Amino acid sequence: MSKNRSNIGRPLHGPDSLSNTLSQSFNRALAAGQLQALDSAKDTDFAALTVERASTPRAPAWMADAQSSDPAARRSAREMYQRCLEIYRTVVRPQDTTHDDAGAALAVFVAINLNVLHDLPTTPAALLLLERQLLGVARQVSAWDSASIAQRQFYFEQMATLGVFVAGLMERARSEGAAAQAKVRKTARDYLRHVLGMDPDLLTFGAHGLALRPAPDAAQAGPVAR
Image (cartoon, rainbow, N blue to C red):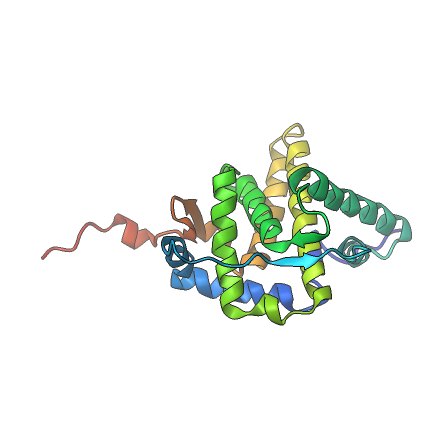
């Protein structure tokens, strides 16, 4: 009998510190409004988070092993995650060949989960803005530059794989009813909470990109009398 060792959110806890370091950085940037500031700084440009493609992906096997102690269940999950990664590379980013772009994968991951959770459209413009915002934070804290190649490869593989995975979950759930869709939304919420370091229900996405929602008191208050 299969012994389930974790819930669906467990795979986001990678075998290195890069995911947690970036999560803490995104949390601080969101809380301080720095993502909006980066969006308004039109002359700011950040190098892409590219990394040489690993000859053999590690994330699909690690995520599968983290979910179950049953060999058959692990094999099935590993094959599923490998298909998700292949779909990302051949359908979402076919232009990436010898190198992978973790910034693009992160933007796709965030956009897909926001779409599932808040029905926010995943447009090319939204993806570009998300990528630019998140790149800025990653570069400011040097988390990417200080990480090893293996850590960078693993981070890319996780983001790319899980973005496609969640999209597939929601596509199936739409034909299965409200309960199935609610379950996928919980998964998206858990993933975003880990990757961005805060409750995604506190976030909004608009013309200035990803930001904290206004506090209820601030939104209801009128202009200050002078």
